[in-house]
Image (tube, rainbow, N blue to C red; front, side, top):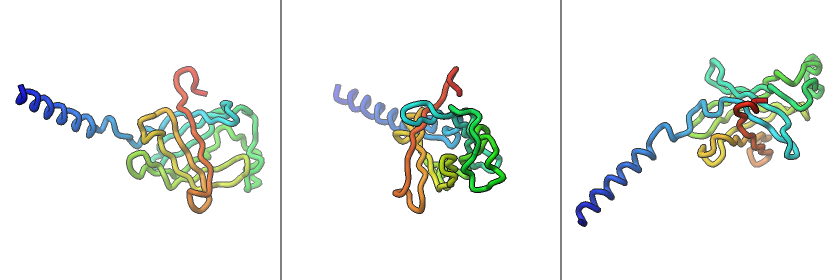
Length: 158
């Protein structure tokens, strides 16, 4: 009986090590791709579409906003102040570094007209594929702000 229990324990350990090492469970570079809902004061404020570029970087553009006719009035470039925010690429140059780390990117804040260094991570080390933490900062990441975005799905793609 002890021998059977020892064999079963070894099989269980082997099974758990295979499941843990399975690449299907690890965060993949394109797991960040898709539509993400942004929030302000607890309300759905906008929707961003993140995609991979031909240079294997990740970008994001505004695909929906609660004020669809809003212009990029605070842009430091006067020639861009009359463009609509919907359709604007405001996340750029993110690179997948390793598991659950898209960094080296820049985020443009249309409320201030400033651009900040930024990185993205999926919530809970990638276990929660439906929540994205995005941090924009000046200089070092301690001097910044983090937002949590929720993956849009189904009929709720705006």
